[in-house]
Length: 204
Image (cartoon, rainbow, N blue to C red; front, side, top):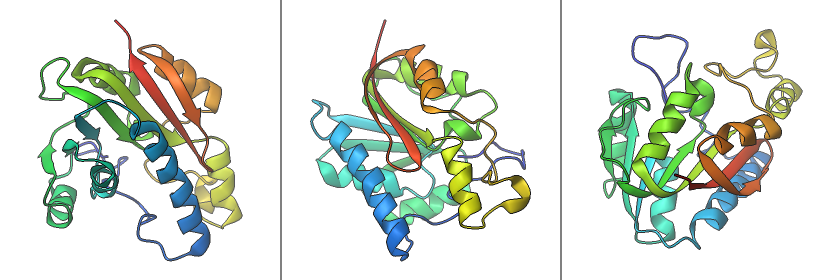
């Protein structure tokens, strides 16, 4: 996820973890995707909106779980072109996470993976997600400081003390649950290393 004309933010993935051939990284991604699957598959939902979809990999994965009607949005037109070429069955739109062009209660589920940590105003994006979902949300962010420690252990972003480029927000498990709880009832929490994944239910 990125913000137009702001060099602090990065579109898509800084590192292609979805396409990695490293066995350890593939194991970590498998654990992350299993958490997403275990949250979403049992839900009685028909349509899904992914906010900050990047190259579309997660939307494509969710679309293979069941025959969901899926829309996916990002602010980067360039990244969306890549996504649309790879996942032709998904509708992609260029919009901001702060201003989703949908009516209230338009989707059964809103999904945002590794988006909120890139935003100066994550609360605004959270409020938009709450507005357009009628039932559920799934949010994931890096688990801090675990994320940065893991980066340092693999000698990545040393000069940034392990902080991935574009990350301007940092949450521990407790901090992130508190944030999500402001708009959603937290139903489930998973900690697939090195992420926090939360399933929430919309509250009035």
